[in-house]
Every structure is written in C-alpha cells, then in structure tokens.
Length: 166
Image (cartoon, rainbow, N blue to C red; front, top):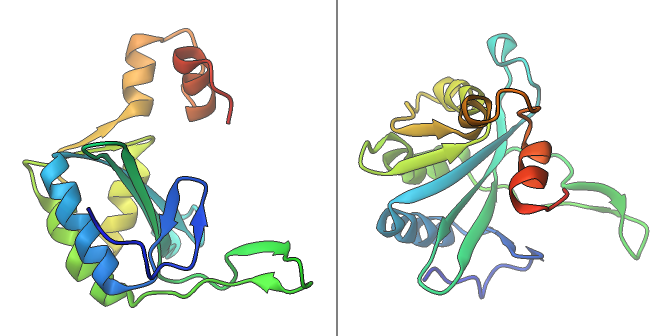
C-alpha cells in the first residue's frame, strides 16, 4: 500500500497527496485493483472556454479497505474557511506535468475500469490535458437507465441505494 506518512493532511478517509512518490505509489496500487473511481475538480465548469483541472480524487478497493486520495495541482486556496488561527488553509500543489505523466497510463489503460459520476466531464477535463480516458463507466447514465423515474444526481442516487446523505 502507498505510504501516507509524509502527508500532513488527511480529511476523514481521504489522503491529500503532497509528494510525487505518493502519487506513484497510489497509482501502482490502483493498477492492481483493476477498478478506480475518478472525480475531477476544475476552476470552471466550462471546459470549452478553458477550464483547467485544479485537482482530482481517485479511489479503489484495497485488500483491507477502500483507499482514496486527492491530488491538488492548481489550487489557490484549499479551504475558504478560516482555521483556528484566523488564516485560510492552503495546500501544496504538485507539478501538473509530473502528476499527469504518472496518472495518464492509468487513465488511458483499457484494462483498468474507471468509474465516475457524469464521466463526460472527466473525459473532457482530462482531454484538455491530452489524456484520453478509456474504459470509463458513468454512474449518472447507469442511474438513469436503472431508475429512469428518479433524479440521477449523485446525492439522490446515494440516498436511494445506500440510505446515505451527502
């Protein structure tokens, strides 16, 4: 399993990766898992007008638990709330070129299943970075096919299937 010893931040069960070595280790483990969830965060929702990836989350089912991480690459402020000392929380951004060099083989590998909610957005966002998503499944489309009468957003889907509220 990847090492999060050098990571200074953990948000509940998600590790914020702050070292390139951690990214490499996480991706290596994700390759072994064969199925990876992906969620891209951008500076705008308008991809055609130049939205860029600020960071992205990934997750996989490990041997003992679900492993999740967030990889910040272009954040200005991580958390707009003030911390205990009255200043804004910031996060160390990793080099986007280096991160994409490590992550793109995973995203582009046809043998690895990627899962995303509204995967069209992930496909477009990674496309801006010249990464071509392959073998990506969309939970929004699946939700619409299985439950055409229900809202197909992630929150209603989690509520209906797992009785969990976000």
